View (spheres, one colour):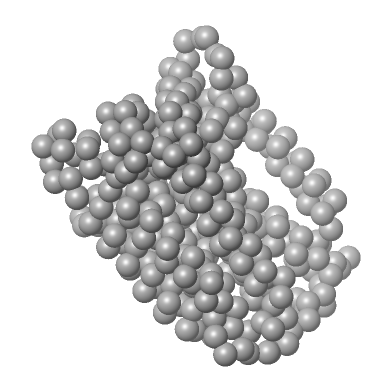
Length: 378
């Protein structure tokens, strides 16, 4: 049984997608500014250097821009050569972090290198995108049922290692990304729908046998019951986070309180304001105007990624660009959605806006790959 076929054509152009590059650079620099605005007053109140997080995030923004530019200069077809070694390295890193990683807030996801912490699960999404895209591109005659089983097995290994950390958000993100790449590669959506239903059933089994931690179950269910009046501390903590996030966004009104302003964010009522809930900072300080402008910029970047995938005549490029598009677009939707209370609180960062070196480099790598592919479309 075979599905779909892939047509390849080398049609290089003179330059990368410059609007996409400029938009990514602007997003990274804006992210550094918002990290500063989210933490400045809190650090002053604590007697610390108010520019501490700003300098670190600006450094990672510059590193990400350089990485994105360098990757964009490569011939994307060389990614096929590194896909297998990168996949193996990521699986080993995910296994190692369970034994040797540093723990925080009940999760063991990071390697502490002293000057920074590296989260291998974030890099695993890029590795799986390259591995799955390479496998599909090597089957120009179409994917068989055997091929689909191999791809799902290949994706399942890092997914289960990530779940064990535990990191439910990245696992869901990886599942969705692989599913969309398979659909683009020719697997019928109805077949993927059956697999999705099987996945939901498996999730129910995991909950029943206790494979998922109670706070993970709370993350999946609390957003649909925001009037919860029980005593489950995990649910109450999540509802507290979301409630203050929505209060901050609502307090911003039309034009916001201005940079470094806003009581919710400057007084620390919004938890994890520089990472998971950075969008709430934008909402309170820049209001509807600022959030609309940010969403427009994110949407523009996602559209350019999708466009590169659609116009690519090379199968490998089409699959990688689509994977990067889903990775970026769903991260935006999930992060903004959880700050508004319409999605579970999963800890997925807002691309290039949330504070963190690993996530900045990972999204820069994804952007650089798409830029490289953009040189070989019409």
